[in-house]
Image 1 (cartoon, rainbow, N blue to C red):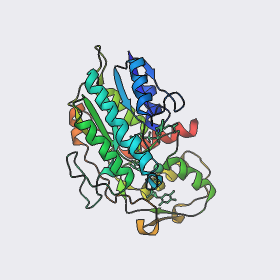
Image 2 (cartoon, protein in one colour; image 1 turned 45 degrees about the vertical axis):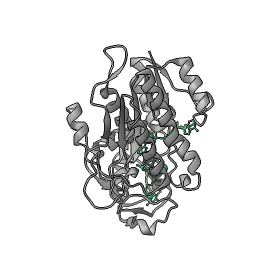
Image 3 (tube, rainbow, N blue to C red; image 1 turned 90 degrees about the vertical axis):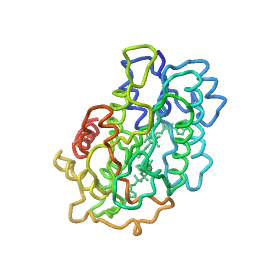
Image 4 (tube, rainbow, N blue to C red; image 1 turned 135 degrees about the horizontal axis):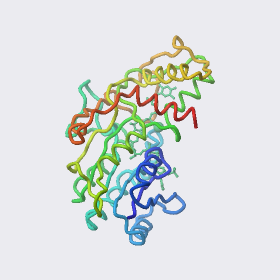
Length: 297
Ligand SMILES: NC(=O)C1=CN([C@@H]2O[C@H](COP(=O)(O)OP(=O)(O)OC[C@H]3O[C@@H](n4cnc5c(N)ncnc54)[C@H](OP(=O)(O)O)[C@@H]3O)[C@@H](O)[C@H]2O)C=CC1
Ligand SMILES: Cc1cn([C@H]2C[C@H](O)[C@@H](COP(=O)(O)OP(=O)(O)O[C@H]3O[C@@H](C)C(=O)[C@@H](O)[C@H]3O)O2)c(=O)[nH]c1=O
Ligand SMILES: [Mg+2]
């Protein structure tokens, strides 16, 4: 049975390949094998390979660049999921899609619920929201996992940036007024596998279709996340130039960027925990696993 993973070389896609490898034949075409900006190429690929499950981990994730490349962002974040959802509906196969805390407006301090009003502040967030809306109304059997602050042992992410900067610099300024939960790509892939049953052919999704928040428990700021990365790295024997005293918290307004980011990225996790009958782990325990995996790789 063929499982199509788009974006298979990205943070989430790579972990999905690991998790789903025992469950079927993984198709994870690279950019050169399948151009995801071409609707015709995608159609031809689907016709040729007849996948039984679609895992869409491809996206335009460069949040600042999206402000000046809105067409590219829209193609990957809005039009690609719409096309995959249309195919999933027609073929009656499930689609798992991934979304972001950046669809929310970021005001207040209350955690967002899955049905809270959206209000993206950036082109990235706006195009991701358009993708979610197309999937929801497609008629496909779908799961959308809205996650936040994704990092992994490999790929480009905040944890790896901080480890590099922490070795190179003896002082750093990091925003402390954006609050959310850092989520390892591995956790996202594990939860995805838990949510798809594999006892029968064809694949089915065994929690009710819908949008689910997916992140570890607890909350922190980017400054809090960086501080914990440095603490845990120091304990693991990593030589760092940075010290806790020189890891300064700053306001978002002191760190200007092309895209505006939400201050409140807290997401309520009860819907997913209840559906699966689990308690999600804390972000600190998840960092420990991911950091060690990275340091040992
Ligand atoms: N990163 C984060 O902090 C967060 C991510 N998410 C969501 O999670 C999902 C996975 O994100 P993540 O794994 O971090 O993303 P990455 O940026 O790590 O991976 C994105 C993947 O998409 C592929 N891709 C992008 N453009 C094209 C293209 N034109 N043609 C073919 N492939 C393309 C990339 O290919 P290549 O490897 O060749 O570049 C890469 O494999 C996305 O839906 C994202 O919006 C949600 C919240 C936070
Ligand atoms: C490197 C650095 C970043 N920052 C800030 C900038 C930003 O507000 C925050 C995180 O930086 P990043 O570049 O990782 O942010 P960003 O790429 O916007 O991260 C987002 O990516 C998209 C794809 C998502 O969906 C979101 O959930 C979120 O993970 O840290 C500092 O304050 N100091 C620093 O030295
Ligand atoms: Mg980024």
